[in-house]
Image (cartoon, rainbow, N blue to C red; front, side):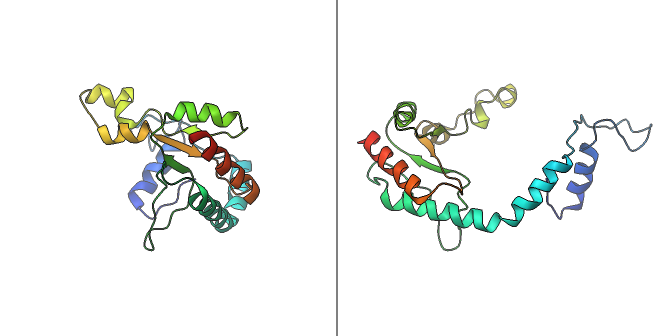
Length: 173
């Protein structure tokens, strides 16, 4: 699903959504296309989920509040927000000086699934490296090497969120 008020993007999106259609037989300036059509079932589910978006964001913010309040902040860096910029917490990513893979493995012993973030970053992807193999982004690499995504989803109960916090604090201590 794409939402935009940019008329140029709308035309590009309409052109890309059907892989086997073009404007005319003389259209030789075609883009490589795929079939990006959403199924009716996917559209119906999307409409229902959009109606619940406000609740989903509210619930994620509540879970984030539990994490922010109870995680050992001496050893982690929380997502930042301000009055002007509110976070929707599609993920709750923390940074720690410890090896993320080790933490993730130990969290599994508590039946908590944590994940590494965005591996590999864009500057390490093959397509980008073809154009600039010398690109270096040390801050991105440092974040990647210290970032862990904790579980955060609307059906996570307060008790489960506190269990995640307790397990995380035990693992990193």
